[in-house]
Image 1 (tube, rainbow, N blue to C red):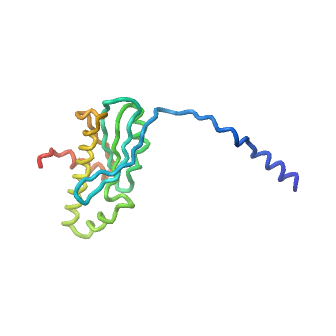
Image 2: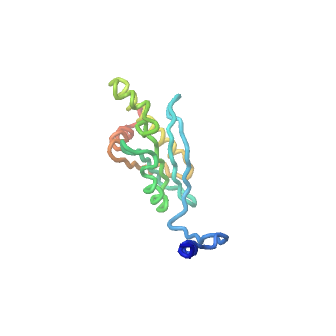
Length: 162
């Protein structure tokens, strides 16, 4: 049995003093973890994924579907950054760890309308944030949504008349 234990140790041996070689796949990107103020008492958590190098680049807004979070489309945003796009991935109020406000809206139809309006304004403020970035081309802003994120995001494209 002792010999078996000795042989097992040698199977898993490597020289820990040597750092592993690293190979970068794809393009380097920066992922900024941020929050922006959408209203006096409303902050929206987001990731901004920015390509390496100098822009200006097109910008994309990503709200997530009902079950999800700002991390839902992170892989896609990293891929798009490798192709030269800045992405803003937002946490909607129905994300699992921010759902308290949204939960109250389910029981009260008037509060549901107010919460939908606040969410649309939060997305529109996200577009404002993208446009304000010096490395984003302001007339090349796109939107990517799925399921409920697409539904609420479609409302965000309404003209900013007031």
